[in-house]
Length: 463
View 1 (cartoon, rainbow, N blue to C red):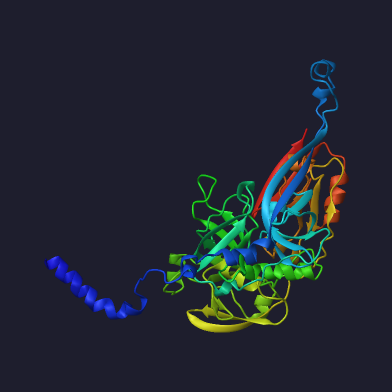
View 2 (cartoon, rainbow, N blue to C red):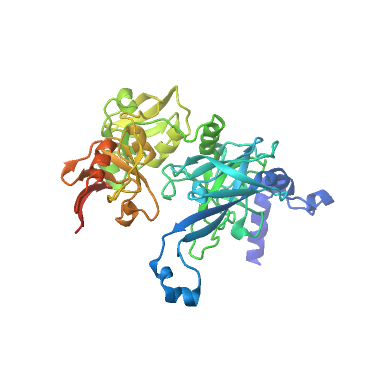
């Protein structure tokens, strides 16, 4: 009886506050049929399936030339192509046929086809690759006046907002899932240099990569990029690249560019740990610590100093170093950005010029040929611009490996993208031409010094 009286009193005390939102039965058939279908009808035609083929040339196997092998198994040669196929999704963002997808979907593609929701298929060319954001732009060959998705504002999203994911999971066909924004500004994901992801519990599975994350107005707010999973399927931890980062990539493609140039800070940053924050007199580990400032770079010109803590950019707070990269990465070149920093615990306001990293010296890219351990490696002179592209320290000097051809001598000795060649056979390597000359020498032994991740690796090959 006491429990019933208490419940009644509580009900009476809160009733006025909720009187206007009391639950009632549906008053019309329209209320029963509330649905996300209108949003899907608006967005789905602009979401496409991306089919990727990668042709790998297999080396000749001498075993196939053996007469006994040919007698029992037929054929000869042993040299042929192995075709690998992959599947992803994409979003039409321009009526001329521009499609945004993930870079990792088309990374090694030799052929790309795109299928629309109305079952039309087109061959596509990759017109822009941006591995730093895990984005790529395709252009459909043929056709025009394609359906497109309006781009929204990812900075306007809030945790708890409803979102819809559209893509082609596991190749079963276009699929729509619904959920909420679970978190914003996820930076410790490791999928790209500008990691600043929207987290959602809308089901995302393999094949959804490159597909659309849309809001309830049918506007694109993100490109679905990756999941965390122990099973290989959705576990409610999906991540999307914010559309505000996508806008810059699309703009570059529309202007005919094959790469994206972004503002260069000219400084090395570090996340703040709890202990480091206490040492600096901060009450919480929020912001990005300036570790090094490149001489004559934008940060140096703005007055940023080693030991400063960047707290906000143009009034938007930053939680860590990746947040600084994102906030600068979405801004167009030209003009300036306002940086709010802490110096010795006191606020400092600075103005940063939004300029791209300089390409000095010129990259002078070339592919090493011949019989050296570097054969098959594409190398470039290091400059701030090249360092930015390859996510290296801007102050590093020398010759960097930009890519390594499959089955090449460089691949076989273990050279990797981002390796900096320091010396060959005791000779310092300062330019790509130095490396080309050193590689042309006939040598029984090869003494190599390679800097990888800040550490110098020395090895001897041959014999």
